[in-house]
Amino acid sequence: MVGPGAAGRGPARAAVAAALERAAAAAHLNAFITLDAEGARAEAARHDRRGGGPRRWCLAVKDNIHVAGLPSTAGTPALAGFVPAADAPVVAALRAAGAIVLGKTNMHELALGVTSANPTFGAVGNGADPALFAGGSSGGTAAAVASGIVDAGLGTDTGGSVGIPAALNGIYGLRPSAGRYPSAGVTPLSVTRDTPGPTARTLDLLCALDAFVTGRAGAAPPPDRTLRLGLPRHVFTEDLEAPVRAAWEAAVDRLGTARTVWVPVDTGHLVEYDARAGMYLVLGEFAAAFDRYLAGHRVGRTTSEVLDAAADPAVAELLGAAALPTGPAYAGPAALRGAVAERRAMQAAYAELFAANGVDAILAPTVPVCARPLHRNEESLPLNGRDVPTFATLIRNTSPPATAGLPSVTVPLPVDGSPPVGLQLVGPRGGDRVLLAVAARIDALLRRREAGSAGP
Image (cartoon, rainbow, N blue to C red):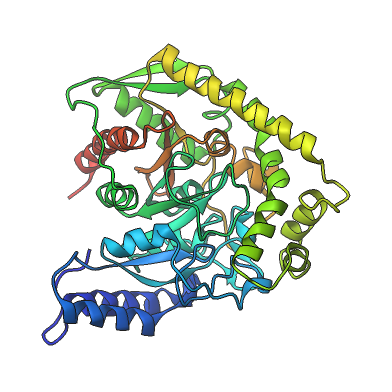
């Protein structure tokens, strides 16, 4: 967080001024849809005049989360004129803790994508390397945090939209347990799977953000207790791009020599559950949820009108064909009921896995590949000598725990000359604070090795 500013300028105004300078220097990333310089300066001035209160810091908010007085486009043309009158509760909680909203960040249209290549507002460059894509759908938030424009960011996650860009940009991200964060004031995809989630450049700040939103600190595992870490036997650690595999194997080796025990766990059935539940929940819940959202906030548009105006053909075609009751591929209420039943069985399977193996967390790479060049690989990308679908590949490891409503934390792995690689830790539902504490111990072990191997 930013300290006291120059003479004649209070600390909040100094923080905002420095953030706006960084935003100008990183404008090529296209991280923001709305950069609210005037509003942020005015809010900072009010805080400095009042004095006292929490220390002020700058926050970027994904453009499908309401901020009072700023457009909330959800990355789609039909909502460009929608300006909410009130903050989403998750934004209000962070503002009460000292946040000043710098602006609303770019994203994959309607949060249904993994690259943040937005046809209306432009593609988002990676905060670690602007020649690469930022990931999605919360790509603008991750880029703004990774590039140092803001201290922290808010995204949303349905099937990996916080963890994927966090991993690809080299920052920390949390997808909380389902229902742990308030979802009011957030443009919906799936009421079952959607959640807001924070990102930050340090794990300490990520933990603080979670406490600000929830008001909970929670107990950590004793520091002298050996951690039991689930090592997936299937899918999650297979078919990795070479730099991801190298970073993952180095982490496994390092943690195997620390106060941790690797416990092999069977995970193939979790992926099978996700295939039968994940996307069917989104397609089955979208229309009703979006109808309620538009009507409740008096947006003045129908769901069909929003999709008719959508700029991304893949998003418009998928939702128009399979998520609207009038669509030719709409599966109907029976498919949704089946997906809900599969999700319940999946949650039971995860609970049994944690209980039977006594593991504190299940670890795997967050994403099996690194970020790819901007404006390319939107539909497919090369992986180990063949072309694979971009969307399915990037969500492969993040979607199962998201569908089950479990908490997951992404931690950057040390890399040697490659783009960023993320480590995903998945914990039991409701165990968010303990999972964050486990992540802190693991992160410290990995950073200690990185510091010890650094040159002069």
